[in-house]
Length: 228
Length: 316
Image 1 (tube, each protein chain N blue to C red):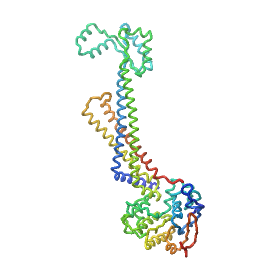
Image 2: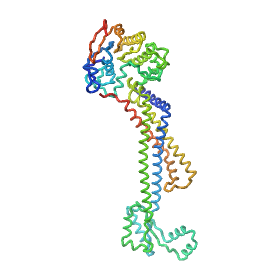
Image 3: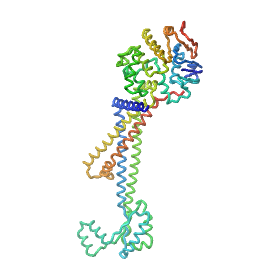
Image 4: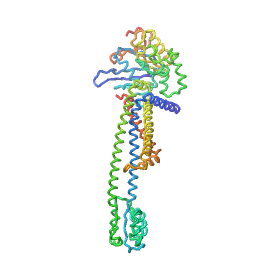
């Protein structure tokens, strides 16, 4: 589903690489946790996958799309296939919860009737039923995060990328978010999650990839007994 | 798929219109400049047509009069006229007999009773003449050299001399020259104002985009296509163009209404307002179309350029 082959990303000409010859293979329906300290290269990795950045060298293939052969005008089509939950939510501040989720569907040209039908179902999944008309500033951090997840999954992507979705949350809300991700994974979506949270890593007990100074330091099939 | 494209198109248009309403004050500045630009375009088209008309009218009045000896018979005159008609530099030839010349003279000097009486007593003292309308008033040399040939000179009245309307021609050349300068000045003004209005609309859209730059980034990350993001801005600025064109043509219309009541039947020197008015109303729809096209082009071009920066993908 996700294939990186000796991918290097250097910002600026003579800087040390943010990612240095990273190779990674993620199977369909897999749930992978990416851990690593700030500045280790986690966010760069995710930005490469969404084609916000272009690798300096190396090959990236996601869902059968070879990024070397991807034309600029096809980038929007790629992004529609990947759901992304951003660290800073990136909700539209002057739209309601419903409108924020509907927005992802408007972009792909879905009709209003279908949108009215689809959005409530997804809001159900993230337990936000009844808050459709709230504005983002009226929500708690956890609720906002779940709106972001709803928006990311509403198009039923094959791949979901979640960048520190629990970063600003207290343990209870963090766990709410994680359980939503697990639920989506059970429905068949490949999930790539980055986190700092030891407890989440331990309790999830999934494959853990550790990035350190731009290299993959370890890649364990199970996080049993893993220490950050 | 076609259905989806229609939905997207209608979303782009409704978003553009609601943005236009939201940005009303910002839009007012952009439209004011656009109105000035379009009014200058319209004004220069109408004045240019009016000047052309004035010049054509004056040119029509230019005729070469060849006065004939009384001994020349009608047949000889006809032969000369035939030859003249065959010349490419001659547009029309007409014959004025002695009696016709007298009749014309009588009409022209209607007030001078004594003169008319004196002329009437002796029969027509005026020579018969051939009136030549040149094809091009600025080039009458071939006609002149033809008339100066010896066999033709002998037919002409030595006392009357051929009239080439020389003084009038100089005046016409001056008018044509002045018109050309005015027309060029009009083109320069149009270009300058078009550039200014593009810059101001550009700026207006830039401000609108700057206010919504986060939204654009998010749209981009969620996979919105370039046309979906850019479309509403283009729709918005095309609306500036359409509304400005309507305001501009309304202004000119009001100007004509005001001028026709105050300056009725008068003409301001070279500018024949009556003709301008007729021309404007005869070509109203074409002019309105021209206004709309110019307005829409200015609006669309500036919004496409203004949004380009925010829509680029990273290439490195």
